Length: 179
Image 1 (spheres, helix red, strand yellow):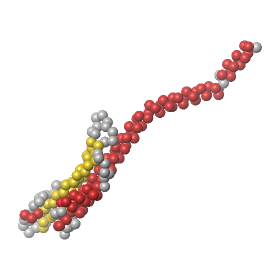
Image 2 (image 1 turned 30 degrees about the vertical axis):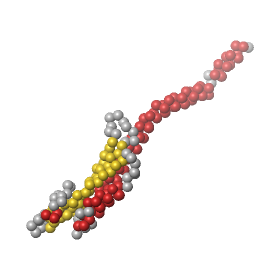
Image 3 (image 1 turned 180 degrees about the vertical axis):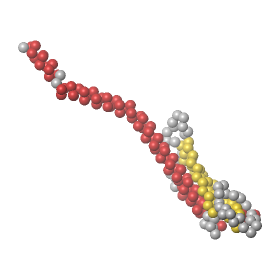
């Protein structure tokens, strides 16, 4: 009678439901190990996406700031010569977060060129910087131009081997002064 009980127990242990439970328990452990191995890669990819997003935001803000500065300067001849006003408008428009690892600078210039009936326009860099009072166009129209350059520098959130720890975005805008 003892022999039949043992044999019956072996048959019960090898049932399909018992094998499925053992396999399920082994697979859940394997899933946990796979997740633990994949988690660092997932974190690095997430941090990389955040860094790219920050770079895009800062670059757009720096370019928009340069545009705001030249828009102020291009209103009329008086604002075109207001270098401080163009710089202030650019830095105020940037609206960058005030954190210690981010800095933005702006520079503005004013210049003139002659339109000799060929459709001359303002170009980068502004032609004839500071020459407006002394320029002689020989009867042709004087074109006044303003230019604003912006630069922002920020530190990366995490330092990666082989990548720089500081990034820089540059913006520039040139516009003709309205009369």
